[in-house]
Image (cartoon, rainbow, N blue to C red; front, side, top):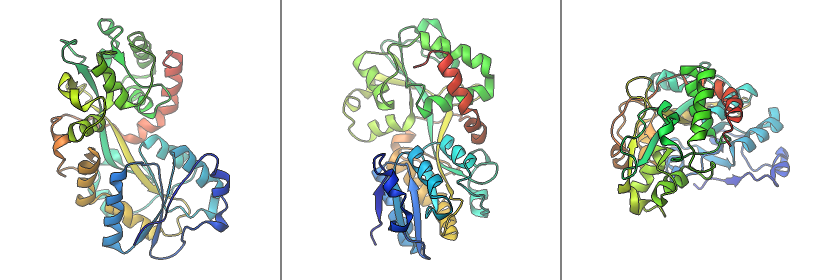
Length: 343
């Protein structure tokens, strides 16, 4: 059975808030999913869940902040059962806005490591991406081995990286604050800005393309963007991946930073039982393997096999700092980045 699918736009947001005319069902046998994941490969996740459970998924898709605004405006009348996002900072924000609820699930408690679970069980991480350092093998004989090394003056004019408004920049900074403290990280950020090859611009794939084009020699990116280029053609990148080396940072201490994609049950979920079943499905071996095979991500559940494109990057030590602590540090990280002149 096909799923209803809608997309939230800025211009249409007000109209979408007319709950009385919403096509989303508030009935047994259905699940209303608000998602900011934008990957076509997730279609398999949804169709498999529908086939196994007999529960139809109705989807509203949009940017995370738009979805949070919508849920807040809908209030107790919201049809949302699940909020699914690509970063835990948005989930923590949703929690702070009172948009999520705590759930009891022995399946989630047992399957997922503690560091990918909210302390109050209001959200859970289901897939991971390591944020690591990539470099031009011809130009960089001694690449940075830690995140702190990116501040070394010997890399002046070499680094391409995303803007301070990007959630990936914010979360790696927030994680470093948890480990090193705000003062040390502000000094670090200021020095990294001094090593920029260009003003921050574009997405992670654009940082990697910057290495190919020669505009920069060092870049930071989530692993799944590079894994995708290993698995299938990506314009401006795949033909030259042999030129690029990579480092999983901080392997002698804190480990490589992990970005999480996750979800939680909406505060006023009309189909709470179905919502919990969906989250439990996302923690199943089948779904976990598909996160890796379909989108080059790392499973959140230990012991689940990874795709060849991900395995090609090699094994590494991840940073297992509590995701809740990182999310709580994001406002401080944003302020610190602004003060450091990180555009």
